[in-house]
Length: 279
Image 1 (spheres, rainbow, N blue to C red):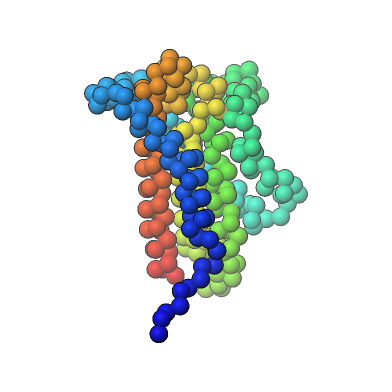
Image 2 (cartoon, rainbow, N blue to C red):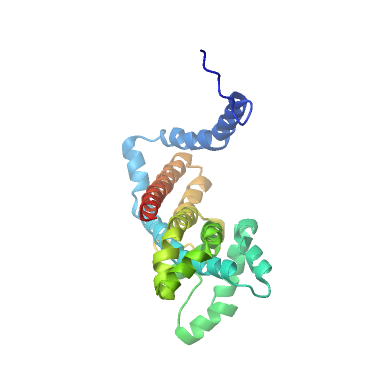
């Protein structure tokens, strides 16, 4: 007897798949391939020299280092914010929940200008830190971190919040009945469930911060070897019409972002399997 063909839940798989791949190619694959094509205009020696000049290498370290610190801060702040928004009721909760996504809607240049005015030695926040602690925020790596924290916080909150909402409170009650303290309950019952989402939020924020330009270019001061980020190096090459060098630096940044997202996928898979095994 001839086996009947199973019908797809979504009709027209061939058409929808073709449209999806076309859009993916136009929006993602072709622009990324153009980086390789423009970079190929340089010989291997020229390419290596372009991406390893001292100034460019320093910009990599500034971008990666500040992004890592900012993403670590976002991991703690984002977890705390998600916890408050899910577990507590307070006046203005909806407003706070909505304003979390402000960095997504606000133009990054506007955020950079606002943060710069607030953190200079004459600004509201910068004046306090400078007068009482002799700490400069604007035009230093600390200012870059402040801008990146502002940009990256929504990624962590929106990654952790849905998972936290789905955790059944009965598990916490059961742990409490069995004699577990609140701290033990959090680390043994709640945190393992949140860890994959927290890793995802951290990685997304990290990848986003590495490529950030608009909010950082104002507050950093763009001091060579001190606060000059890699995206600024790309823009500098473009302003000099050196497209091959600009795309070479961009290709390295693309590779870094790809590594970060790959490590994120591996860690999420490992943690999810471990949590499933424990469950």
